[in-house]
Image (cartoon, rainbow, N blue to C red; front, side, top):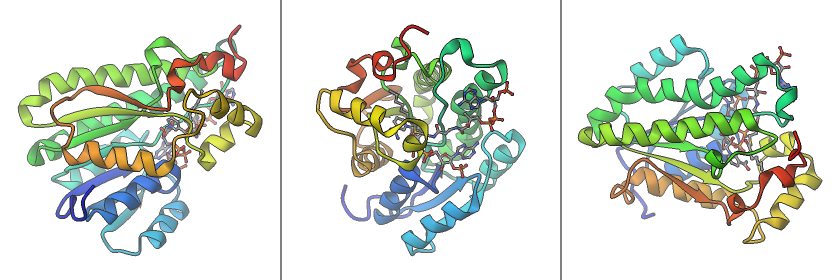
Length: 255
Ligand SMILES: CCCCC/C=C/C(=O)SCCNC(=O)CCNC(=O)[C@H](O)C(C)(C)COP(=O)(O)OP(=O)(O)OC[C@H]1O[C@@H](n2cnc3c(N)ncnc32)[C@H](O)[C@@H]1OP(=O)(O)O
Ligand SMILES: NC(=O)C1=CN([C@@H]2O[C@H](COP(=O)(O)OP(=O)(O)OC[C@H]3O[C@@H](n4cnc5c(N)ncnc54)[C@H](OP(=O)(O)O)[C@@H]3O)[C@@H](O)[C@H]2O)C=CC1
């Protein structure tokens, strides 16, 4: 992306204090954007701010699952050029061991709360002919044993993205999902043991992880408008890992 691509543009990045959200925020800032970063914890956001070293990064503690707070916050932003729906995640467990509350928590985080953010951002996005990029998982509609709750939620978000793309095209709004392969963040390291992660990376057809820089560049590109000839699409930038059974990788195939 060329320097200054995002000059004068404002992006909201959820989960901006860590991993992918931090890398995306720093890339957008480098391209000239004003970035509003949110997450539940203040400390990681402050660390991103220190790394950014610019007052174009504004940050606030916000739990996106707190619907009233999230709606009010997004409404207060006004015009919005880009929403990066990055805050998300799950826990690995056999489907039969996921409690009702556990299922609901993961679906709330990865579908309901994200959808509500997109809805809340609609007036601001329409005012700027903006874009939405939602971080997802590869081929969720094919199923991912071990994280069945998350696969269901991500497939729902992909369907919502496609549905809204049809209608919101008239407002000049484009929406995308981006599914990276394994990105070696602290977050994924907390979720999966190192040997499982190493096995997943080794069996990825491309034979490597997806780098933070690659994910950040893809988000920036989709957010910039270069892909506006399409909308509603889920892009798998995963080295082919979506072609390999996540079930067998995670040892959850029988549950
Ligand atoms: C091939 C696979 C590749 C996968 C690639 C994906 C990578 C990533 O996604 S990287 C992101 C990494 N970070 C995360 O995933 C962390 C995300 N986790 C969370 O944000 C939260 O843990 C949560 C949303 C999943 C749950 O939040 P919260 O509502 O605060 O949860 P509670 O602690 O109140 O628990 C609610 C409910 O869930 C049950 N539960 C929680 N953890 C587990 C677990 N490990 N196993 C089973 N059940 C779990 C918990 O027990 C509660 O249920 P009840 O006990 O019935 O009350
Ligand atoms: N790393 C990987 O291999 C892959 C990751 N992804 C997806 O990419 C996204 C980012 O992943 P990654 O950077 O690796 O993981 P992280 O765990 O580092 O990122 C999750 C971020 O979301 C924030 N967050 C979580 N829950 C909430 C909430 N309720 N409200 C506000 N913020 C919240 C967290 O901050 P805080 O705790 O302070 O709220 C954290 O900054 C996730 O959606 C993940 O599922 C997809 C495919 C692969």
